[in-house]
Length: 99
Image 1 (tube, rainbow, N blue to C red):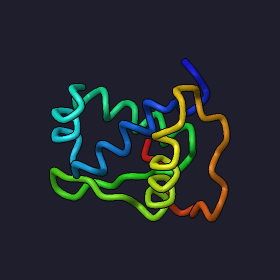
Image 2 (tube, rainbow, N blue to C red):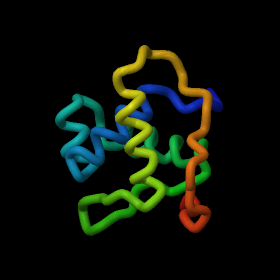
Image 3 (spheres, helix red, strand yellow):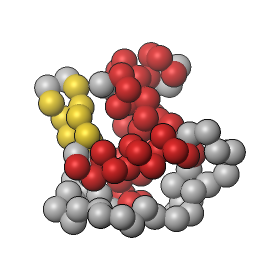
Image 4 (cartoon, rainbow, N blue to C red):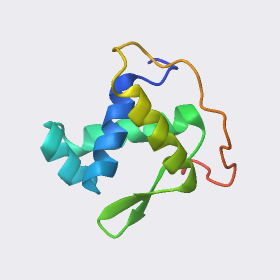
């Protein structure tokens, strides 16, 4: 398994945020909710921050997630290679990844 965040992970995070839930995002991009869930959790593990928090059946961005979403949107249009730099501007440390 790669230790780099991939463009696909960034795109899946953006889809979940755009659609407000894993299920709606999965239907929109023709992936399973489980695939999206695993991709977002892997992204969180690689970055060391929680980016989404559950709200009923929906999700919303954490403060760190808001910063990450800006990064994801910037990366969405760039090639297909892995992203190997960690965003470092103002990452809150109070958003641990849930075990």
